[in-house]
Length: 155
Image (cartoon, rainbow, N blue to C red; front, side, top):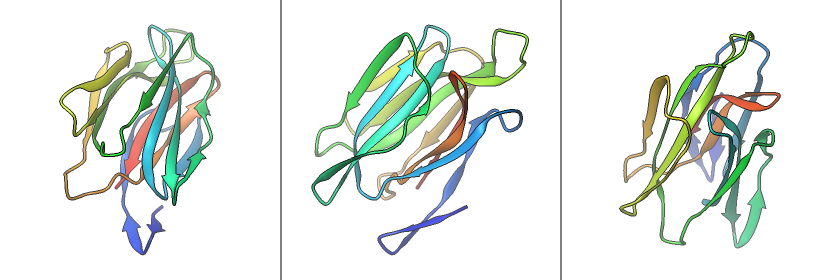
């Protein structure tokens, strides 16, 4: 699936994590600059992600993907700050379901420091680098019950 935003085609970069099973697939395209990213997580996995973006001066809050977690972190981007990378880890959940979940999440911007890691850095590592001449377009992925199963991006 692809989207057209402000006359530009967005490219969907493959989700990392669970590709099958009982996970709901979703797409969240941002029609403006990302201002906030909300991450709910526990000590071992990412429960949910939610994004707010600026659309012509109005803050638009997208749906929360996943559910509640023990901890809540809000990444508040400065007006000049842009996303340069999203990385994390995924592995099978620690129960009999065998479902793969996103274990950790780290957000990089054009500032020296990173946000995160949130969750636990365990399992298979994934990384999406966003070049300076490319604009972040949103997230897509899969979620099920209490966790984020897979995460990808639009550029």
